[in-house]
Length: 531
Image (cartoon, rainbow, N blue to C red; front, side, top):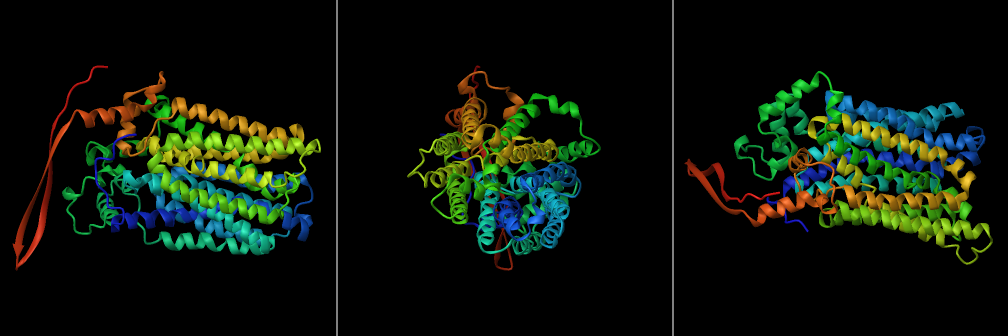
């Protein structure tokens, strides 16, 4: 286990509460994303009963379920330039009115084409929000709590899916759409008073606004810039050698993005790791299960009402996401990803076995197995692959390329989501439900090996440390090289004698004592290690 971070952070300080508030507000975008993803499961069966002309056949069902990711693919491509031009916060705010419009069009839809267009629009907004929230929260969080705050969007998404399941159990599809329109409106309201990312402000040369944003995040409205505490300097805005260097480098990159930079190993490796994790997230079959939960329970012959079983699965996913908040900065990213893949592998194998036994008339007495399997699957997904790939997207990709590459990775992830959802019925018809879930199970097992051999641990590391790790190393060739950051950090701790002297100068004005400067001096004795 790596040593604790080198800075102190008071968990219940006002600064922590402010950053928590910011992360929760931004995560409302993920809650609305959960509503988009959860709508298909109760909404489409409701359409088939109350408005069959909107979903005349199975092909229409598959298209209505899968088109949001196709819209999100385009939206995520647009998110990168928007995040760079108008900022992370404004990109989130721009998605709100479009989202409201999309939900209203769904509620008012009279034709299949109209509801298809509305689903594409809501998906487009999902694409805008997905990378924006990840980058915004990452750049506004201290390293010591970035794991917890970075997991909140996944928790809110699980909450949005559960809300959609709950409302869909009692409301018809059109009323469900009307109710869903209120959430993006709330997102717009809560984002108005929040600050922009200080890293983005500084990269655009808005140093005064960046200073205000930093002081708001640290709750130090009158702190001189040179006296900002060491833990605040762990934030991305302080990772360059100097403020002027960061401003000038980003000014140069503003005019255009060099494709050649993508092939530099310090950029290519973290992007490839991030993108591959996002691929494994989707080919686990998670969205096929979320979009077709009611249908899966119906096909499995569950002993419990299909809608009730769906709500229970959504509730378990929400509770498991809450559990992940307490694990991510304790257990670390790698162990949770490996455990996540292993649990999903076992659960999907069990579900596939149920369908195999059912096909041969041997599933009598196993009516609860589908529910138990999907509950365990959701627990496994929630503690790892639900949030950690997006968290690592904000941690691994270098700051200069983060906006562009995050949107590219998000777009490719959404494109794969579209393929998985659209092909679920074809896969099921080709190899049967058992074969489909066994395939997903095998892919989950493959993800465990990928993480074990290639993904580095980032728990407790500043974004500067992570970026330097990829600048100084290449893809590990030995299994223990994946812990290079951890070993380097531990070695420094064991060979460094640090004496910290805090000197506070005070002045007296009209009987009041004011702190005017605080300096922290560190005297270090280091040793040189040979490779």
